[in-house]
Length: 166
Image (cartoon, rainbow, N blue to C red):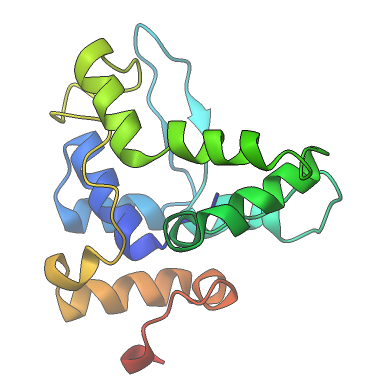
């Protein structure tokens, strides 16, 4: 699943307890990774663009790339792509159930009742808002331009560059 970096930066800032400008720098850093702590070993990610390119640039029959936004806007179609990859596309009932149980509302409800292991101590919830285009209200023009300057090639591949910034 690939997500618009203009929205990723908001979630990343919340998750790691960073300012938006620090999160923009974090996403552009080729040495970026997950920190080591009591539950995790450091994991290399690279910049957002490097990370996305690492699993999307070379087509492979066992990989399907789905945009986060399409999971929201066209869940049956997006889940159908995954189901086809898994050889389950004939099972519409199962696809519908998968959509229901992986909805943001359901995952947030589960986190509130059972907790969520990947929740950061820096944030109140792992499942924060789950909506697209939050960046419109949250990022300055300069911040938007910085993200596009850093990640324009990958953003363009997935239709993430806002029209006024093309």
